[in-house]
Image 1 (cartoon, rainbow, N blue to C red):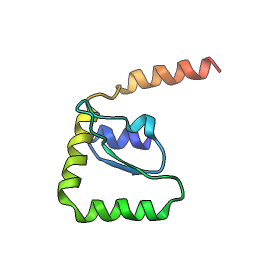
Image 2 (cartoon, helix red, strand yellow):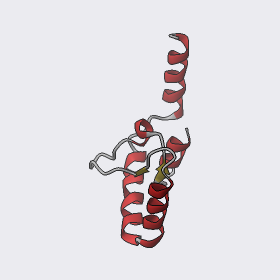
Image 3 (cartoon, rainbow, N blue to C red):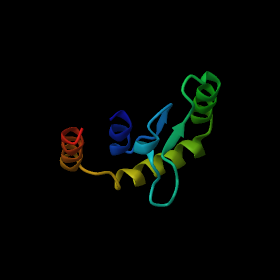
Image 4 (cartoon, rainbow, N blue to C red):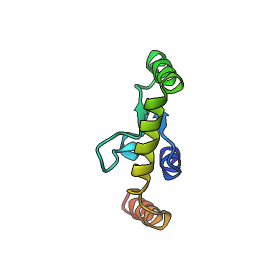
Length: 88
């Protein structure tokens, strides 16, 4: 849910899980960075890149805004969750 909420606001994501929610923007770009769980070196590297490379930040933000347009609205998401819960 956190990944979806961030993308709904056009905010890039740096996370260790959530590839399904992160997805790709219509232009094929990735609206964030996923690092392996527990890999503090990869996390530090991603944060360093975010903080020191303005062009990369802008590209991620652009991708996140594009990805936002592809996300389902809350009514659709609630119906999908209800369907998943009733079929378990």
